[in-house]
Length: 342
Image (tube, rainbow, N blue to C red; front, side, top):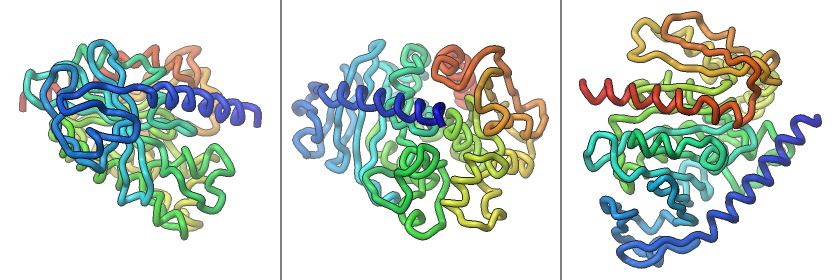
């Protein structure tokens, strides 16, 4: 339809602009210059970022762009993913100083929605100034495996490329590559821990739409790894909406009982919400075109620790996210403060 086509075209144009912009960047480091496709001339070495503490880079990680932003650095990298069987890209924003004046940063993961990649949030959400203020590192992974030619993978905006749904696929073809859940929760954090100054004991996750679904599921399944969660306009009950039914059938097969573990409303119903260490923040616009058919926040359990904020007149766009991003960054910064005092 027109809305879907417009979303796809806009995302494609914006993502292309961002890639071209970032790919032209180079940055100096203590062992040389990072250029497109290389890290220190494909040699492992120590790089000093913006005069801050050094980091060790292995040759498997390639820098494809770097830009200074609010005194911190926005960097973009590619690497070979063994879990997904393809090359993957992610973006990192590193403030000048960690929140607690230690060598390591609390880390916040952002999961984007349908048709997006690792650049959309960095380009449009306006989070960098807040991250610099609070000393929190942000990591934005891509939304699906890339560079593959699986059946029907590139036929629609809401399935396949750009629409990984942050689950582990079980259907033929897709089960060998579309394992975004394992990538986000295992492979990517392991890579980051080895090569970036992050505090793995202070990690949180949030996202938008499909990414909101992913953030909620990942948190509820891994509360030992993530201290908090929030979401903008998440797909709350995917087993009962067109986006979810299409994706789950393609990735998980016809057995609908296998879909339930990837449904936030189901996972919340199975969780002892009274025992949640921190509240879950969900922001939803009342004028969101997908609210009634796809998002369905009223399907989540009603509980004091599930804070669903409805915002009059706001839609599904990044204008909505940019308006309320401060509330979400502060939500996670407050959680990090409480956890650091334990």
